[in-house]
Each structure stands twice: as structure tokens, then as C-alpha cells.
Image (cartoon, rainbow, N blue to C red; front, top):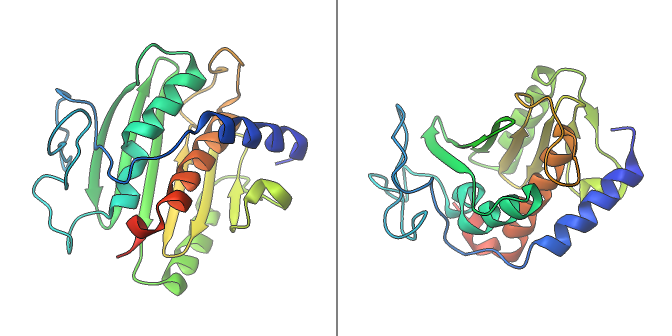
Length: 207
């Protein structure tokens, strides 16, 4: 992006808003209709147990599920000025855990691709860059020390260990929240929130 100072400001705001991440996460709002290939929460509000119908060998890691977890949802509601977390649904296919948030302004789609090792993750990350129109590398403090790229339309992609995080707000074309964030700024701040969760609970990111 061409606004490094704006990114640093957004990053600082994200750090202030995030007060901690749950070690276990949810997989969508309770009562939400299940889409094809979707997974439902196991127990409690947004789920507090393993993914329904999945075993550790075949289901997403807890780190991946954090993108649809309580703390990320609460953080998002705060940034958007909402009284409660936005409606969300999740799915898991081809080692990709996807959480879609249905916002008034449009859908925010967060996906985590899990690979066997860091080499495979790098290959996937680099190949994906071609598929993100006009992607530019995120440099300096804004990349948090991880390989990353983004575009003005609202796609932000980070590579961390064996996982590729993609926050996609390209369906949104209007400013969001009381601070009137652009889709690109909102995606970036959401990504940094998730990365903070992963850093706080590295044990959840294990295969």
C-alpha cells in the first residue's frame, strides 16, 4: 500500500482494541443456517469445543478457527460500532477454513489455508499473489515481520509458518464503522487482530 503512516495508525488501533484471544474459538453464530460444506459450533455461544463432525487429523486447527472466534468477533463489533457481533458462517474444505461475516456493507471473507510445512506454505502464498489483482508487498512495520501483500480493493494476505491468512473485503465498496475505514484498512486491521491471537496462543497453531 502507499500509505505506510496510515497502516501504522491502524495497526496501533488494532493493538489497543484487542484485549486477548480465546484459546478455543467459534465457528459461526448460533442458529445460523448451515451452508453446503459448513461446520457448526460444538457447544456454547459461537462454540467452545472441537468442530462438529471433525477429528484433529481431518479438521481445521484451533488457530484457523480463531478467525471466527469470540474475540475476533467482539473486536470487529467494536471497530464497526455494532451492539453485537455480526452474523457469520464457516466452512472447511481442501484444508481451507473460511469464515464469512455478513455485514450491512457487504461480505467480509476470511480464510486460512493450512499446509504440511513452511515450504509448501511459501509456494502457495507466492502463487496466490498472482490471483490478487494489483497486489503490492506490505513493507516496514506494517507487515509485522511476516511476508504479506495487499491491494486497494480490500484483499490482505499474510504468511505465518505453515498458514496463509487471507482477509477479503472486496465485496465492500463503502466506508465502514464510525471511523469510516476503507475496505483495505478494515481488512488489514482484521488481519492484525488475528495475527495477534496467533501470537498470543502459539500452541493452538500446531498441526
